Image (cartoon, rainbow, N blue to C red; front, side, top):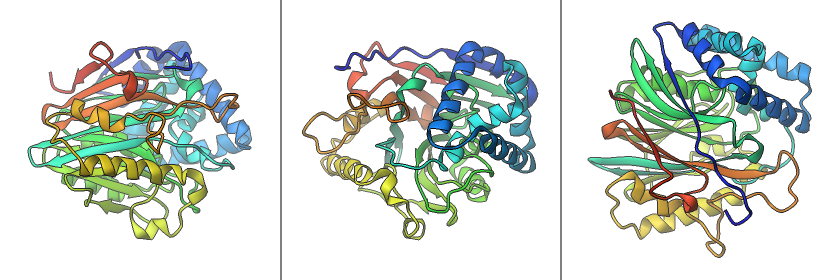
Length: 363
């Protein structure tokens, strides 16, 4: 990018075992120094947000207990990750619950992720920018996971079981963080709600059932894309809400609630006016759509440059301090019909024929 930042291609971590604990061991060992460095960065972010180490440990252990009661296999995988990495179980739990723990931090957050989904029958596919802290630009990876129920591929951070991805049944997920005044840590992390969908869902309806039943207490939108169609589930303390309407042939999400009930309790100061500006820019582009035929056709929708009226591509402000250095770390595309994930490091403005890595969840 123009500020001199160079996005590096992420490594691929391959996990295969019939045992959740063994998959965790593989995950922890593969993470190596990058996993340890990622934890150190998050420990710093928690501290910078005014969350002391004792509180982080307390909430991480509460989250691990909530996951154990909800989905023991995911808890076993986290425990295996700790054993394989040398981190403690509560530290790995804190990584997976980083969204929830960071909800305790004060202050504003600049722009985050933007998601575009084509919902044309027979042409369901999607694209997302993943914006996060620049200091974590080397702390994420691609993954290919094989387990007794199937397989999935995805993009995630070292130590975190899942984020963006698609499974062999063509069920894919995207994440957009939201903010509600009653958000609280100590429950099931949104990243593990996404992981459960990738592990277990065979259809759109099954994915929705899993998300609607997930005991989540911190807000995010999880978008589900499948050959049968797409929906967005807004999770929050106000209860899950399904967003099925959109903008013509598109579903769009940035970082504010689209459902009235959770919107009444929204922490507007976190993402506005930026989130609304990004949604408006995306909706204008969709109103003038050019009938995309595949996920790569959505990439121009997510590009932004000076004068566009919104920052879909995130670059840290000059002199931004630790915790405020937001950067578009990756652009991810999902084609559910072929169970294909495509990822280009950095912003969509940097994507080209030589930057995309492709993974399929089907052998």
